[in-house]
Image (cartoon, rainbow, N blue to C red; front, side, top):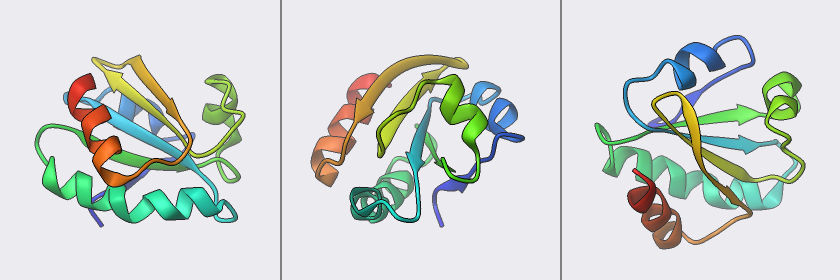
Length: 106
């Protein structure tokens, strides 16, 4: 897997402490649109390796981080640069649109 799983416990280190930009995919097992964009995010993580890190956070298992960022709708993608929230995208989108959004933000 090209994406990395993060939890409430590892979020600070994996995301806020990362040297490269990080996209956090807030998702849940029961979320259809989340499952739709999952394979696209895997491919983008592989294609953009070294430029951006893509991580997945299950909101059901990790309510702390999701609550802290006010995540009310999933999928939600947050992009962090230098440990700070830089961009947000809510809802599913085709791979091309996701990749364009990430490339423009980093």
